[in-house]
Structures are given as structure tokens and as C-alpha cells.
Length: 263
Image (cartoon, rainbow, N blue to C red; front, top):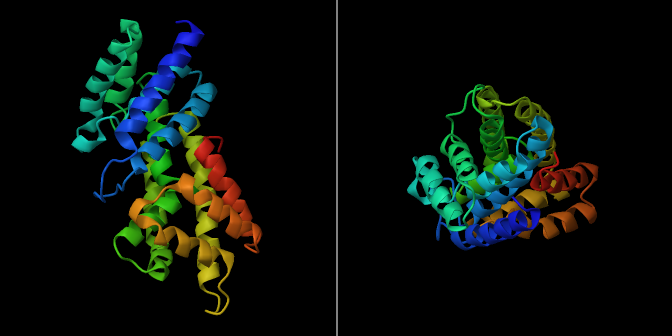
């Protein structure tokens, strides 16, 4: 397919996904809040494309599948199968080649826990990127803080709860199906553990020492109703650069890299 056509189709699909997911769900629903799935989708696309380069996967198939993988998230548990069919209809409307549409359909169909090491590399890359974004790294820690705040938990309880949360996340490593996915998840897990330790140390300080880490967690928790990591990053960056300390500066940089899919 012509490169210009690919770019044009991708832009149109980005617009479709933005219109569909930026305001879904309209209120908190399980582990989801307004706009979360859209930002998750864009992060997954970024990470999946990086991993595709490492694994030698077809970037066009991976990119389209990543953009469309949660198009039917609102249906719940069966969203991968329903979404694969809807994605195929969307791609057919752009007159894309049948073989390309079929490959994207298959990648989306298996992305939610059905992949094995025998599946095509494109399937494994997307499935792993999807799992990693929600469960490994500082983005996952941000998600945990937001979810706990949405349930009414105090920030001190949230930080203490990370001791039980971290081992549960690490158990998910066994579900990864690509070498690139395992490498990314291990590196993110190390960073996540280090970050959570820094948070615990910050909250163990005397109350009067309201340092940057405490301020950052309080800010994230206060934004839970319509949390957007992209929208929060300027304030997180400001807190980091105005006396937040080296740990917080490193965390801020790390968040930006994970959002871009480069770490």
C-alpha cells in the first residue's frame, strides 16, 4: 500500500478512535474512567510499534490493530472478539486489502489473553503491549493510585497497599508471549518497584515534610474523577522541577518515556 495512503488512513482511524473513546465511559465503570481507554490506546500503540521494530513485526498491521484494539471496550469481557469484527468493518470501509484486514482482525481477536508463543508475532506484540501498559511501570502505578482514589481510599492506605499490589503485578509476567514484551516488562517492573519504594520512603517522613513525592500523589489522587495522565503531566513536571528532588525528576522523565513507548 502507498505510504501516503497508509498515513491518511491511520489519521482517519485516529480521529474515529478519539471520537469513540475520549468520553467513554461517561462516568466511572469498573477499572475505567472517562477518557482512560483512549489514552491507554495511544500508549499501547506507541509501545507496540517500538516492540514491533524489535521483533520484526509488520508495523502497519500492529499500528492499525493497536489503534482499534479497544474500539468495542464498552461491551465488556468479549470486547476483543466483538472489536475485531467492528475493526474489520471499519477497515473495509477504507477499501483496504482483504489480507491486511484479516491480519488486523486476527491480531485484535486474540489480544486479550488468547495468544500463545505459536501465534504470529504481530498478535503477540499487541497482546503484550496491552498487558504491559496496564500492569508494569510508572504508568501502572499512576493507574493504581487513581483507581484507589476513585474507590475513596486515603493516599496513605494506597501507598501501604502497594506492598500487596506489586507481587500480583509481577505474577502477570508469565502471560507475556514475546521476547520484547518480557524485556520491557522486566525493566518496567524494576522501575516500578524502585518508584514505589521512593513513595513509601516519602510517606514515612514526618508530616511537616510535605515533599514533592507526597504532593504528586495527592495531586494525582485528587484528579481521579476524570484522570488524564497527559493533562496531569505539566503539573507533575512543575512539582518535580520546583524542589521535587532527584527521585521525582526521574519519575517524571520516566512517565513521559513510558507514554511515548520508548521504555
